[in-house]
Length: 419
Image (tube, rainbow, N blue to C red; front, top):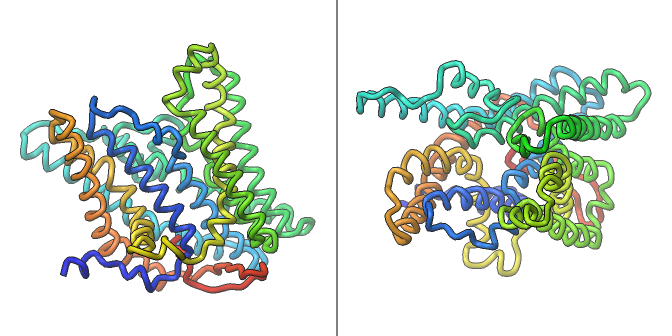
């Protein structure tokens, strides 16, 4: 009975296994980072953590690849950009992200009010003027995200990117469609967002003293509008250069280069090495690096992984044994629910209410945390997120999905992916 309750029928889903691996890895890195909160002073900083990429940045690139690919293919299919395309694009994106988000946000608000009512104390919610920002994703539009539901900084960046990308493409099409090809317009759109955002960061990085630190750019919307664009750039290459995209030799080389660059970029910004920057007198240079070049470096390095991972269609060998493939696909499917539930709802509101009195207690809390995240995320996905996504399919037009065969030829099939 329990098996049926938590089963998601992953074996029947049309998926790209390599992309599922990336999505599962991204959310596991994020949840693992939050799990260490339970250890308190007993966490000794595992070295492996300093070599792992930022899971959120990996999500950005993967999301950009999937969403950008959908937008580009829709644009090419219609051969124009019009309000109908834009409305359908937003309808499908927001059906995918907003219901789950508002469900969890509402649950946190209700929980805080109920706890205040039961204790007779004032609630711990932020002021109404701050709280309302969460409903419009402006909680971190131009400043640090407040302490309440802080993990939503990355979702706000994605949501504004979903607005910015198609609007810039629409403007480019309106201005240039009589002189430029659609391929050139798409490339100009991507580069405009990347260059424009990087210029903004660079100019402000130069103007503001180094003593102000990294400026919190990682979590500010207007400083991260390029976050998904590196994945969109990969989708551009897949759409317009399918033969190169499907070349196994190129895929393997880019994978190696991408892995090395990602590991180096991650290590260059890890906590373990910051002390060495200070000792060598390089801390100002590191601060400037984190304000400017780090973001395009980590984005482009992860984008190099996309051709290989996109070409990894099915699980084979050890990946297909011992239920590994099903576990990865399962985690990939529930990744958005895991993202919403793991930190504030579960870690801060449940697990952290248990005192960490010893090393053993800390690790027991970590175990409890993982169990709650996996179980509750599966239930949220199965009984809320998935039905809402299925409703989306009835209320909006399906978008074209490009598949590439071994020879690099283009084909179209509906139903692959989860965005």
